[in-house]
Amino acid sequence: MNLRQRWTQFTRKLETATEQSRELCCLGIKEKRFMVSFIVRMTFAPEDRSDIAETLRVLATASRQEPGCVTYIPHLVEGDPDTVLIYEQYRDASALEAHGQSEHFKKHAVGGLYQKMRERNREDLVALV
Image 1 (cartoon, rainbow, N blue to C red):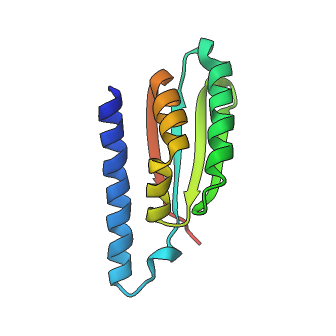
Image 2 (image 1 turned 180 degrees about the horizontal axis):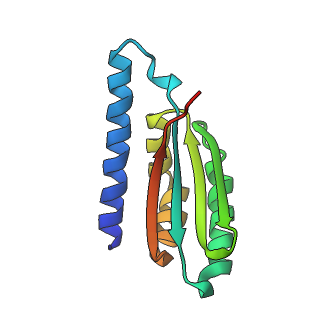
């Protein structure tokens, strides 16, 4: 999957999350109460480990400064040092959209991680309580 296809896939998921928040808002529930939470799983080549770690450090530091970012935590999978999980949580769909449009996301995620990743999956989460 090339960069343009990945970006299209990301924006479609973002539009879906935004639409779901609007539907809830139409039910009389304020949109801002619904945080957007998900896990991104990416795999990389062993030779990219140090570059990926540094890119994630910079990206996490910048992302955590966004007003709508609640949590942004990159993890290595125990026993699989070439797989990274990022737990992300945003105040609402608008905050996630702002994250995707930020310069640091475009530079470090799209221009860095996406260029080196072998595979990427996103799992959307729904809070139980």
